[in-house]
Amino acid sequence: MSDPAHAHPNQFALLVQRRFGPFFCVQFLGAGNDNLFKFAFTVLVTYQLQVSWLPASMAGLVIGALFIAPYLLFSATSGQLADKYPKEVLIRLVKSLEIAIMLLAGWGFVQHDVPLLLACVSLMGLHSTLFGPVKFAYLPQHLNERELTGGNGMVEMGTFVAILLGQVAGGLLIALPEVGARYTAWACLAVAVLGRAVAQAVPASPATDPQLAINWNPFTETWRNLKLAHGNVAVFRSLLGISWMWFFGAVFLSMFPAFARDVLHGDEQVASLLLVVFSVGVGTGALLCEMLGRRHVEIGLVPLGALGMTVFAVDLFFAASALPPAVGLTLAQFVGVPAHWRVMADLFLLSLFTGIYSVPMYALIQLRSQATHRARIIAANNILNALFMIVSSLGVGLLLGAGLTIPQVFLVVGLLNALVAGYIFLIVPEYLLRFIAFMLTRCVYRLRVRGGDHIPAEGAAVLVCNHVSFVDAVLLMAASPRPIRFLMDHRIFATPVLGWLFRLGKAIPVAPQREDPAAYERAFEQARQVLEEGELLGIFPEGGITRDGELGEFKGGVMKILQGRPVPVVPLALQNLWGSYFSRIEGGVAMARPFRRGLFNRVGLVAGPALAAAEVTPEKLRERVAALLAS
Image (cartoon, rainbow, N blue to C red; front, side):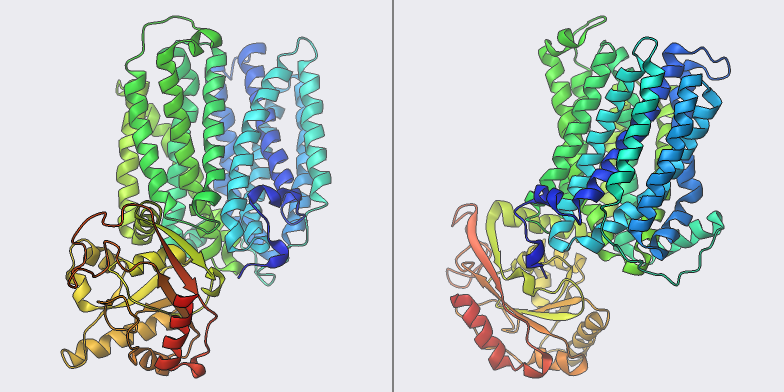
């Protein structure tokens, strides 16, 4: 249910609300400081200091490895802490730790103490490891389902903008003659102090499992967290999907300097431009998710994002393989070549679809994870992310070592993305089904939902709707924030394509009792099992698709279901669907004349208040649905 007190026009309005604004600033400043410090240090040991035991060519890899190592070692512990203790307390402690680390780092910069700075890199990795589970477990405590996608989009956008600004600031400050190291030290400390001050305004976020006994063994707890995540198939596959996104993104981010120098023949500013384009693209895609999902957690966007990632990664290969010869281009010269605009467009759109791909997955994990274990699930995600990024680095090294060019590496990763995405969507068909529903309600129909808050965000319920077309179930899926298991006439499963989709969605076929009594009883037993598991069950009580557009008599199947499991019943009504391609018309034949009403038909779904099981009769349900149809 939406909270009127939290109503707002869009995701940007969250920034002025205390439940989100201070938290957003804290994570923004933290991500910015991470990258200011790391990039300044990388530039320092690459261009200004000569350290025999740390060659300039290895500096970036060593710093990256030291930063990511704590994710593997301490994510499991940080997840437990975030479930056991209030999150605002942990946020303040972590930001206080950041001040202490930056004091050490400041001394390291001033003294050019490389071992101390390397130690600070690991400590900042620990800081980020502790903050990660808190960050993503905080959002579901303060944002409702309709705000979760927008909130995650803002965090994703803020993170990439902070990374970009941090690297730019770090590079500019450390390059200042004579005073660069000192100014960098003061900047890192100032950002840390500012983050700690803002953290004081983060509102109370109570512990979700205060009785949790901490297991300090990182190895056994890591294994336990992965098993815990594996218990929810949709959540675990989403963890793998996000980790794959980090694998995919790490390939491009790690290759930008070499891509700019060896393929685009540009200078350091060209490499920086690629980072800017990538960061802006991810941020734009993340922000688009709320609008595209109509302020719901719309996992149908994930296949769309995966498709775009593959298409533009492959096109980037062709664009980069057809560039005119050039040598030592400055930024102005690079931008002046028309062929380079295709490269930048591919990179922007590739990253935009990466943002569209990732945000709904994060929101789904937050929404579907058990509250008492949410932070530990996020910790498991961080562990998998780190592992996938390490494998990404090794994989790129092997491909380059095998003689592939950088554009060819992009092509391989783009095609591999298609295979990985296809695998995920087939083993978790909810993504594919929601994508089909998303496309149907944006391209064939324009679906307007009223009273959507009456569809429960949690707990078992029966959804009862009139039956107008062969795609009614798909339209209901598009309107619901949760999966729906449908009880459907067994004959619809013989319909090409649609029958396959409904089987993929685990719809329950029901035959008339007189035809197959055993199948009839089995269907209702499965329906009751759905409700016992706390899921949504959708039924069409008319027993078949209307042949004249009128609301038929409601049969008594709903009463049989409620006898075994009394749950709320939500009446729904599909409007203006009669006469469209998927409805029966012209002698009772459906799908006979494509586009007979054109594209983008306006159709509606109206949801009414739920009825308690004790109030339900077929006649009363029919009256409610008829009233909704007329509204």
